Length: 161
Image (cartoon, one colour):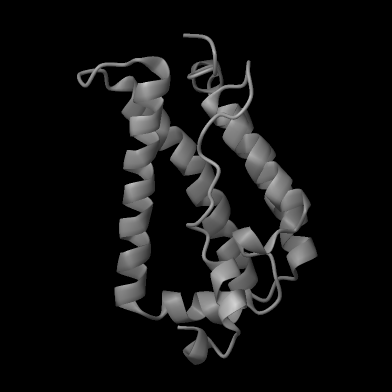
């Protein structure tokens, strides 16, 4: 993929948003959603290449966008991440297999991550500069956080069980 996009392997690795994605609560008294919001906000504020905020990433993302096989693989990876998040939330909360709440909460948290990365990718593909896209992404994060209910923002608080 990096050859086709005419970018370095390192640039390609930095443009793939599926690795090292923060999906688990990391601090006491912080819920899963709050932890993910904090980590995403940190990545956006630092104009991190790990979330696609770098020059040259558009070429790489265009290769993925133009390839049905690569788009399909990215979707499959996204589904794996969602299932892993649900499993982690079940473990953190002690929820049983018949409890739908971990799945619903995983969907909400995954929505934050997916929407942010998709928006960054779209803006970078449209020729946005990383610093501009970063500022826009911070506004988007604030808007998404405002849409989350208190129940989502207080679910799976580390140490609360």
